[in-house]
Amino acid sequence: MNQNYEFSFPVEGGNFDDAGKVSVEIKRLLKDYGIPSEIVRRTVIATYESEVNIISYAHHGTIAIHVTDDSILINITDSGPGITDIEQAMEQGYSTADDHIREMGFGAGMGLFNIRNCSDNFEIVSTLNEGTFLKIVINR
Amino acid sequence: MKMNLAILSEKLGLEVRGGEDGLNREVSGGYVGDLLSDVMANSKKNDVWITCQSHPNIIAVSALKEHAGIILVLGKEPERDTLENASREGIPLLVTTLSGFEVVGRIYNLIKT
Image (cartoon, each protein chain N blue to C red):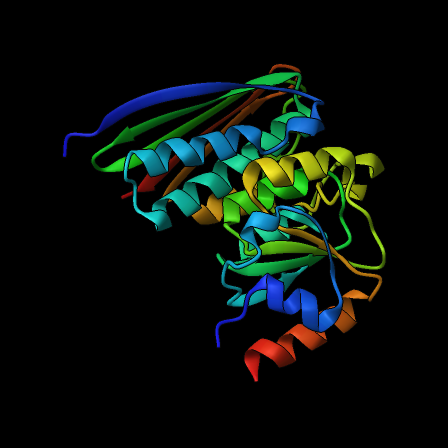
């Protein structure tokens, strides 16, 4: 097949109006490339949760996708407050979201948990007052 | 008989607010929830999603999960942007004054029994 596609999207922090828009676009592109639906499903869950995390907590960020014959590599980079305790943040149900975010049905403390569940390889690095980096690999 | 939202709408007296073009898409199951991450993780393609969330972000969730459509319960009305997004993504959006419990129970009886 020799597939090799790279694309990236900026995500603006605090802008809930467009939450999910980038992931809908990523889904369209992956479908256009003929990626199997189960791989698309896992990829967009990971990008959607990452997108919502950037909007909820960071100033701005980027979602970058690299499609190869073997895998979908997703790099999420944001500049923001960072995560104090990553282990705690990974726990299902733990969230620092405020009431405004929770009222909309976000901030359930499931985001990072869902991302890890959809990944074959998942790495997270966070620096306080700088930002957070996620590397997600989904094998094809 | 394959179930779709046009039939469910008639049987349950739901009102269609947007995305009419998709009303004949098959409904194979359903999911109820107001936490978006829960719906992202656990709902399935062709589910009808029952929720009381009415803001525009529900349409992105439904589009990503390829839901058959969304039913807003307890008389919730979609926000204007929600309607616009529903039309753009072709996601049927229906409303009812019934509670989630009533809606889910009736739909379950129609499609799972």
